[in-house]
Image (cartoon, rainbow over all chains, first blue to last red; front, side):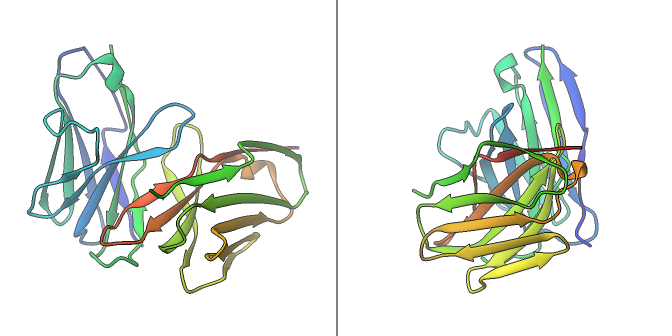
Length: 117
Length: 113
C-alpha cells in the first residue's frame, strides 16, 4: 500500500502560538510532499510543494515565513504555522508522491484540523 | 490557468439509483485525472485515477470516464447506497513541469435510504 499519516489529527491553540504538523509516508519513500488547506465547504487549495532536501515552493499568496515547511527526510515533512491567528483555522492535508515523475500518484494523509482561539 | 468545475454542487438521490457526477476542466493539457471521496471532517480517499492516455477506469460500482479533448470527466455510481453519501472531488494533474493537482469544487452527494 501507500499510507500517509498526519499528526496531530486535531489541535486547538491560542492566538500567537506556533503549531507544528507532521506528515509521514509510512511504507514508501516520498520524494515530493504537498501541503493543502481546506476551508469549510470549499475545495483543497495547494499551499506548497516540498522536495526532500531542498526548499519548498510556495503558491502565490502563501506566506513562506508564516507557513514554514521542512522536508528533512524521504518519509517526513513538517508544516509549522507560526504566530497562528484565528484566520489560520482550517483543515490542513498533506500528500506524498513516490517519485518526481509527472504521472506519479499523490497519496493523501487524513488531515489536521487546526483551531486558533 | 487551469480551472476545474464540478456540477452539480449537491445531489440527493434515493437508494438504488444510478447517478452521474460531472467534472470539467479548462485546459486539456493534463497528465491524469483523479476522483476522490471525502467524508465530513476527514481526509481524501482515492477512488479512481485515469491517465491522460486512457478513456475510462472501473472499480466495483464506480466507473470514471475521461474525454480530454472536450475537458470532461464523469463518475458513474451504480446502484447507489446510503454509505456512498460524501463529497466527491475531481482533480487534474496539470500539464507542464509541475506535479500540481488542481481540485474541483466538489459535489455533495446524499443517498436517501
